[in-house]
Amino acid sequence: MSPQIRANATLLVVGILILGGLAPLAPAPTPPSTAAERPVESATEIDSCTTITTPGEYVLTANLESHIYTCLAVETSDVTIDGNGHTITVNATVRERGKHLVTSSPYHFGAGVAVGTRVTPTVRNVSVANLTVTGLDVGVQFVNVQTGTVQGVTATDNVAGIRLTDATDVTITATKATEHVEDGISVATVTGIRITDTNASDNGYAGIALVDTTRSGVHNTTTAGNFGDGIVVRNASRVTLTGVTAARNTVGVLLFDATATTVTGSRIDRNAFVGLALANAAHNVISETVVSNTTATKSLLDAPSGIWLFNATRNRFEDVHAIDNRDWAVYARNQSRANSFTNLWVEGLVAPSFTAGNLTNASVTSHQRITSPGTAWRDNPVGTGGSHLVQTVRGGHTQYDVHSGPSKSLRSRVRTPGK
Image (tube, rainbow, N blue to C red; front, side):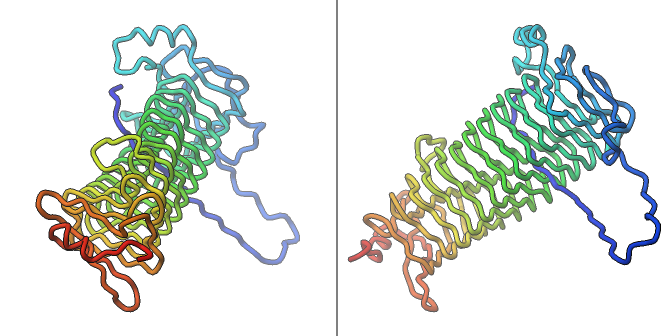
């Protein structure tokens, strides 16, 4: 298994029908139950690794130790697996043997739960819940699956935590994906994926990676302490990040080749290189989000900053707070243009700063105070010239427009706050 950033996200489709009216004289007939609704007493008990080929409800009655590549393989639709609080792990002898194999990963031991395959018909309506998976290649894996749920699962100390590939309408909720060699949660080539109320922290790559993804969302989720990105959205469109916390990662949130993606109501804090990065990204919206305390302890390319733009075009920033970020509040390069900032708050350690070279046709409108020690704005000219911010007043609001020219044009137009 060659290392790569893999994407991961989920969509929950829930329909509730409530019929009201007068109570009948006799009880209404009960509709036939689905696999997910059958009573616990009808569940098939599992006490060892197996392949599931019959629809129904299954419940673990013991911890499982895998001696084979994959412990639980699901090859049919309409299956519910209740881990019942038990753990799936790999046999110590198998683990040690795997370390000596000539593979890209020293932990190539398969999946704790593998739902579907690339070569079998699409699997539908599968749920995995109340389970801990540790020590395997992948904790829980969905491949070629349509409609499913991962709920209350703890995946820890695997190569990768939870992986969805070629999946549609799958939800990951109330789940932990921590301390993996690679990504905590990764989804690739998926539609309608929803991740909610989940923690993806302390992983070797990204906390959550969403690649080749559309119509998906991450909500009320924490990604912290990941060696790579907290959340990376790559080659994706119509992805929504709401109420996420991305802290103490190398990059908090990265939108890479992303369009029509929104980040709202989120907190991005104490990341080492960049809080929020947009690279080759266009027509995205960032709103009501705080980007703070970037530490600048890692410099992957250049200019650690709160907000970092690389060939970013026509993105909107509305009601964004950039607080106490090093080394720049906003840094833009490589033909970043036509980006707009409305109600941008910049406070703290450094001047609110836009790079010169390639931020063009942008505007910054602030209804709020902008404070910093020293110069109110500074730029970073490239060669003999670059962009600079020109302050004007339009409609009672302060407007900063970015123009091309040498930095002295900027210097002559700004004042030190309070002077």
